[in-house]
Image 1 (cartoon, rainbow, N blue to C red):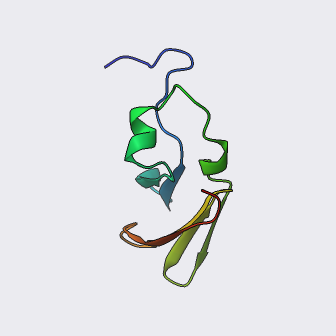
Image 2 (image 1 turned 30 degrees about the vertical axis):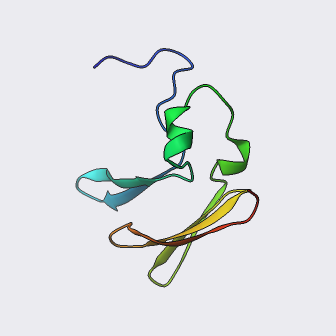
Length: 88
């Protein structure tokens, strides 16, 4: 598998890392606001309202915010807890 060509879609969303003083940054997972239909069209259109703009956590929940959605994921497992579409 080679390096993607310039402009080729690879991923749109948040990369979640763990930091260890010995091992450095370790990728734990990725969160996106794109649905399955969006992913089939990926690279052929702009997803401005679904681009994650903010990430925050409160207690055991990680929240990602875009212009079109707020998504809540478990902070440890990164499994989606719920989402709210705010601009279809």
